[in-house]
Each structure stands twice: as C-alpha cells, then as structure tokens.
Image (cartoon, rainbow, N blue to C red; front, top):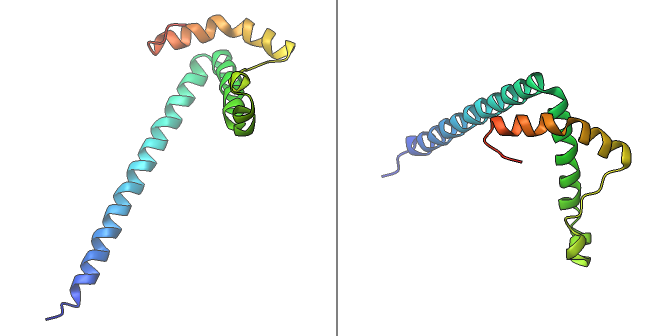
Length: 105
C-alpha cells in the first residue's frame, strides 16, 4: 500500500537537517567574527600586517597560470618598499600575536 505521508515525513526530516546545518554555520561564522574582532582590538597593527601578508599569499596562490608556467616563481611573494617598511615596523606585533596562538615565527 502507498503511504502518502511518507514523502512529507522525509521532506520534513530533510528540512530539519538543513535548518540544523544552517544554524551550525551561523554559529561558526559568529564565533569567527568574534575571534577576528578580538584580534583586531588586541593588536590592530599586527592584524593589519597579517592581512597584507595573507592577501599577498592569496594573490600568488590564485595565479594558477603563473604557477603552471613557472613553478619556481609560483610562490614568490613580493612587496613594494612602502609595504615592506610597514610590515617590518609591525613585525614584532605579528610575532607576539602569533605566539599567543602557539605559532613561533
């Protein structure tokens, strides 16, 4: 015999699972934002310096064509003089911040 309630029941289970996943993602995103905001308040110079470094690394990693054409240069990160000077100035702050996460630079 056909059970017309079965499809509705399965759909309800799927909806429930999706709602649970969405809530978990929302909680994780909220936690990540709190963490980032805390780091930014704790050491704004280090946070800005890390953002510059990570942005530069992301740019290099995103350039797939350059990596394929010349693998030796694929992970070469370069900064202009002003950016290098700014990073050098905040490097002690970056080292100290990373140390709080257990990262030794």
